[in-house]
Image (tube, rainbow, N blue to C red):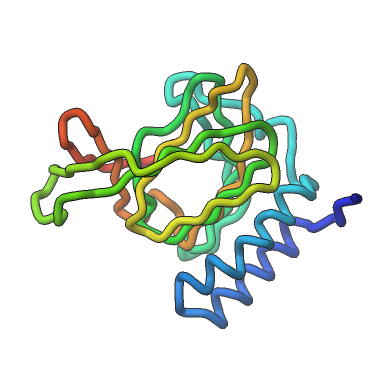
Length: 185
């Protein structure tokens, strides 16, 4: 089956239209998910530099689009083999689609009421590996981690309601019950 070309510019226009029409984050996720799959499979936007990774961080977030007010941020994120991101939330709605390679998402559940700054009780709540065109979506408070268990750099497409560095999101240290700010480079 041939994949019809779907450009990043077309996706951004569709994303703007959806978010102008919808206030309900669940509906935004439902409507954006199939478009994220379509863009991920089209790969018209994918460039060799999207495979470059920060050795120290273990991944690189390549910004593809962001509105002036830091909303509607679209990234290609590349992951080094054996590396990933610690348990974290996004602080905004998120839709992620695989582009190249398999990535494992590990899902977590927060047990405490988030009333103690810097403290969090987080436990494993499932996992799923996904590849090209497969989509996973998140509400702002949902927690997950990502790991590339392959021998190659993987790439995934990430769409957020707001750029992650402006959401006040957190990463979680499960062993020490700690919650800390999570900023990406």
